[in-house]
Figure 1 (cartoon, rainbow, N blue to C red):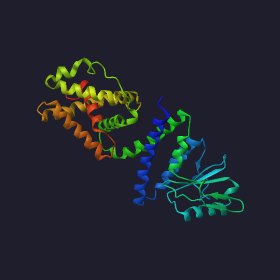
Figure 2: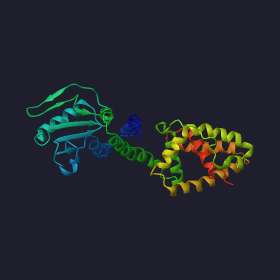
Figure 3: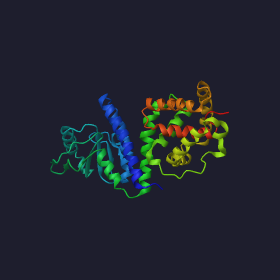
Figure 4: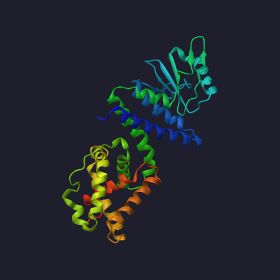
Length: 317
């Protein structure tokens, strides 16, 4: 099982993706962001606090001042991208005027950007609101997640965030590409993630059946030395890939077929020089990743392609 530090680091990186999307949509004045955020945070807050939040915009249309609520725990949330003081005052005053305090003891305002630090306390006859304690943002949520001791709960949150943010965020960019390329880019992303790195003792000869020697004798020293060096850094990440439920055996076979076809063309254009062809093939995937904003490192790509070379999926006979 992975340790808390690596899981929390991964969770924090997922929220960085969310922050980027929120800022982009805000600059483009896309008003649907609050609607999407309500559903996102409803699920997330339920996972963190074991709430039973529902979207009251659907179940209680007269309670328009709040977005999410757990009637059993008597807590309500407004989810907004507006962090102004006037917006907070408007929400709190409306909550009081509608006498929602009779049903909900606590009101929280969740700012999906960054909150502005304030210490004001708004007091009404039957209800009060502390701007310091009752206004939340992503930074606050991360601090709460970081205090969770249950590794199982942390892993559940991380997995959900990955599916909700990373895959959806990149998914819209990748839908126009063949599934084989999408999967390869996913593999490169996994290999590039330092959370998946672990020092490995190199095998005596990390080249099953000496395939590099047999197929590219003149270039064998270069290819084998490079693979041996990268093996120490990326072999553990390769194990993570192999254990991933997202990478099925069918996908792996399709990747092999795709790589055989494209790498054969690169080898031919390089006059059967695997060293040159490897660089050109690596550049091809680097451009794909760069164009789609994926975080990667060049050596991860080279290691993966060399691994596939040994399996005869790159530069096949």
